[in-house]
Amino acid sequence: MADTTLSPDAPATELPATDLPGGQTVTAVKHWSDQLFSFRLTRPASLRFRSGEFVMIGLMGENGRPLLRAYSIASPFWDEELEFYSIKVPDGPLTSRLQNIKIGDQVIVKTKPTGTLILDALLPGKRLFLISTGTGIAPFAALIRDPGVYEAYDQVILTHTCRKKEELAYGFDLVEQTKADPLVGEEATEKLLHYATTTREPSQYEGRITDLMRSGKVYEDLGTPPLTGDDRVMICGSMALNLDVKDICAAVGLDEGSVARPGQFVVEKSFVGDDTRLS
Ligand code: A2P
Image (cartoon, rainbow, N blue to C red):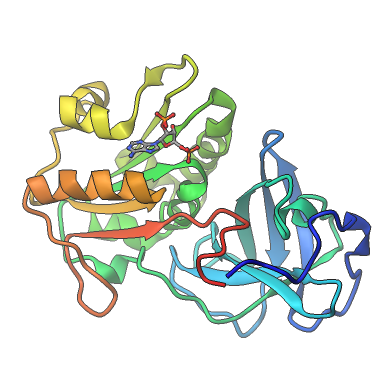
C-alpha cells in the first residue's frame, strides 16, 4: 500500500518534542554515512522481545496519524534501551524525517514484537551462520549480543555484504563492541567470526556471499569447514539474496523453519526504513 500520510517534502522540523502517545526518547544517534544511521531509544516498560525480532516504529504524520514502518531491533533482549539501524531514503516518507532525529526527540514504538530470526525457530545444530546484506545485519546485531547464541552453538559466523566499504562500518564496530562486552565478550571472542565483503568497491574480501559460499572461498578465508547439514542458518537481505542463500541451504539438506515449526534455516527480508511491505 502506498504511503499517503505524509508528503515526502515535509520538513523535518515538525518532530513532536515530547509526549507522543507511545513515544520513546532518543538517547543517541550516529550517522555512519550519507545513507546509513543508527539510533537508540528508551525502552517501553511493557516491551518484551526475543533477540532478532522486529517492531513497528515511526513518527507522527502531518495528519495526526502515526507513520510507522517495521524495523528490526538491533539490540539484544537484555538491553535497557532499543537500538535501530536504518538507511536514509531521500524521498522516503519516514526516513527522510527520521534521519534528522536528535537526542531528546521522540519516536513512536509499538510494543508488539514479531519475526522469524529467533533462536527458537531453529532446531539444535553445531554452527550458526548469520548471512546479511545491507541493513539486514540489524537482527544479527541483537543475536550476537545474546548469550543464548553462544550457549547453543560452537561457532557463530556473521557475514555482511554491501556495495561499498563505508557500509560495512556498522558491522565492524558492532563486532568490536560485542567482543569487549562484559556479558558476551569472552564467548564472542572465542566463537564469533565476522566476514565482511564488498561487491562494488575493493576491500579485504570481495564478492557476493553466495558466490563465496559456492566457491568455498569464505570457508578458506575463515578457516572453517564448508556448510553442512549439521549447521543452522539465518538469512536477512533482499528477496533475491534470500532466495539464493535458501538454495545453498537446501543443497546441503537444510529445511526451512518458522516460529511455529522450528527447522534448520530461517529467512526474513530485511526491512529498509521506507519499505511498505507491512503497511
Ligand atoms: P551486487 O552489488 O553484486 O548487486 P543492495 O544494495 O542492492 O540491497 O545490495 C546489497 C548487497 O547485496 C550488494 O553487495 C549486492 O551485490 C548484494 N546482493 C544483492 N542481491 C544478491 C544476490 N541475489 N545474491 C548475493 N548477493 C546479492
